Image (cartoon, rainbow, N blue to C red; front, side):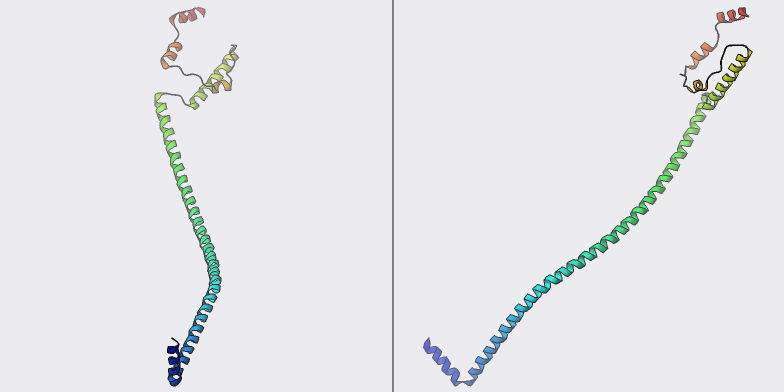
Length: 183
């Protein structure tokens, strides 16, 4: 192997072109070494600047997210206000319809009760006032009847069936005869 190396060295020394090849190879090696080192430096720089660039992108992303959220909240607020207003309008219309329905129901109920002969609150109040007037008139004539109190007129009187009330309202023949004889 030593012989082969000596032979190559002699060929290179004898051939000046071989010397150039060796210088060219050395220059290429040096260039390759410099390219490698430049690549390593670029990688290191990119790594350091990449972290800074990444952090900058994060900050910009956060800023954009805040703007987007505030815009979304404004739109949601506007939509909520609009829906609330619409709900209020719908509620008002529904209340108006319920009031109308209630009025119709009250009118029809009053009409049906009138046809059945059921006295209204006004009729009862007028009757109570008339009874008070009559009681006062009887008291003036010498009777011991006192006028009915207004609180009594307001108390609910249990209703009796019409047949029993009619039967009790008509005097019996024995009572009629006794009443005629006492006069």
